[in-house]
Each structure stands twice: as structure tokens, then as C-alpha cells.
Image (cartoon, rainbow, N blue to C red; front, side):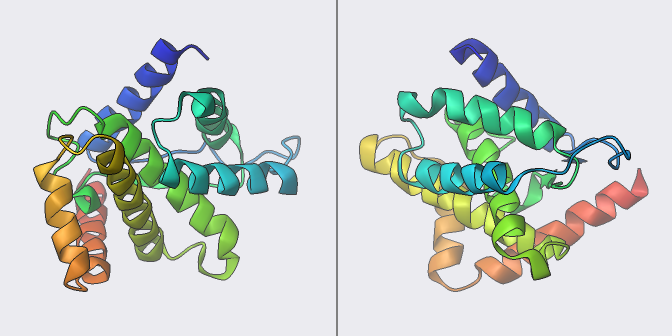
Length: 182
């Protein structure tokens, strides 16, 4: 996937998050679809953690494209993208919003894989997504100290005060309520 196509996919995901929430997975698997392999699951988890450290590494471009494609098509991992837990990031014009939103998605998928007993706990998934997104934000700021986002700075403050789990849970509940109205 070219860099432009990758950015377009990330922007599409961010735009969908702005519209409310969506599930990043196809309809339930048919009898002919094969669940994700352990190797692919481990690849996704490893990539999610690498991106938390070096989110702008151009060497990870192809891996990021693979992960977007894989997560979109795999029948047994589903993440619900919701803009609320990202505290207004999606509505902002932040330059790195697509990378942050995509990391939110990857972190939620990695959480499902690493914590299968909690895989259906959507509030815990959302928290994992926000935590991964904040790790990416911190890594971006190490390389680009002027790349600040007011929305993400507020989330960092919430996290520093120990309020991130409660914030993510309430934000997810607001998203779920909004989705139920549709």
C-alpha cells in the first residue's frame, strides 16, 4: 500500500470515528472463512507495541498497511472505533490524528489478543485503545516537541490524575448510547 493510500485509509478511519462509532470487522465469519492465525495475531500485537515507540517510523509503513487490511478483513477480531474516548482529537485538525486513531484501533485489537478473557469488555478495550494512543502521542512529542494537541494534552492530564479509566468508560458509554439511538 502506498504512503498516500495508507494515509487515506487512516483518514477514512478517523472520519468514521468522527461520525460516531463503527466496528472494524466484517460480518460474522462464514463456515468457509478461516480465523486469524496465531502468527498474524502475534504480528499485530508486536506491531502495535512497536508503533507505540516509533509511530512515525517510515520502515513500519508496510506493516501498518498490512495491519489495517488484516484487521478490516479478519473474521474473529473486531474493534469498535469511537471518537469520544479520544477526547475531541478526531474533531481537531491535529496533523497526526490519523496515526493516533489508527493506533487506538491497533491497541484495542492487541488488547483482545493479549487478554482473551476480557476481549468482550468494550470499556476495557476502549481504555486500552486510549492508552496506546497516548503512548503514540508521547513518542511523537519526543521527536516533534511542537506537535502538541490540546485534546491529547487534556487526556494526558486526566491520565496523570488517575482518571483515565473512568473517563474512557464514561466516554464509551456515551458512544454506545449514541450508537443505540441510530
